[in-house]
Length: 281
Ligand code: HH2
Image 1 (cartoon, rainbow, N blue to C red):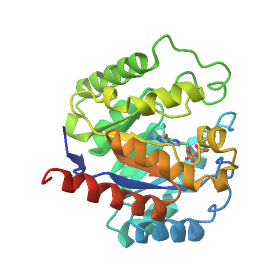
Image 2 (image 1 turned 90 degrees about the horizontal axis):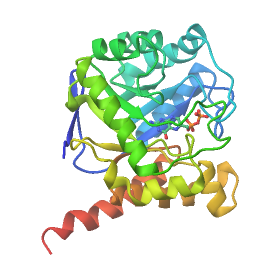
Image 3 (image 1 turned 60 degrees about the vertical axis):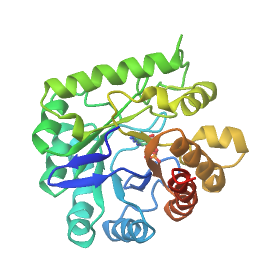
């Protein structure tokens, strides 16, 4: 298994599961939309998540929730860049940009971002080239359909096999574009064109998605599957989300994308203490 992720000039060690904290700079994200729209508020939020132990801070200027309104390149850059520029000199955390647009990737890379997190897995025209040229690490996520319609009628004959085949194809496309395996992270895309059953199957069989030893990322935090299982609204899904993150880590995920960083970091400390000790008996 690959335990070092190359992010430009930097290396992220993935020997143990790490937390990626979500900073949404959007008016309409499903769990925290509109709360951190001003650059100063967003910066403060990012620094709080950093202090809580996030190894990666993921900044997003476009919501991908079902039915969310699309955002132009210029608007996305306007939302994200001022925060990135102020954040870069103030943290050692890996900075990630959650985007699918090549122009945004280029602007973010110039501002010092280390990782490109793309829910379209670099399928937009020019995205592969922009990511390759950036030197950044990339996260390739599976999505069936597109955000506007993805939850209408998700269907798979074999959800694990199909997600795996998609990710394998995207890894090949990255390699052909000059992105080395040491720069790639894979993500099944929980909630992106999936029913509750599909999500549970993917979580149960996460390890089957490891392709060429590449590290896996899981984003389960506050998602509707947690709501379906607990009956709670998004702001009250912390406990369910921590449980899901822990299961994902036990099943092989090395990066957990979460809103509730402090709680997840504590839970992972407990898990890591148990798994680290297991080798010595
Ligand atoms: N989920 C969301 C956004 N980006 N990126 C990856 N790699 N994996 C995920 O599961 C993932 C993601 C959706 O969550 P959130 O950012 O909270 O909401 P929104 O898209 O509405 O901003």
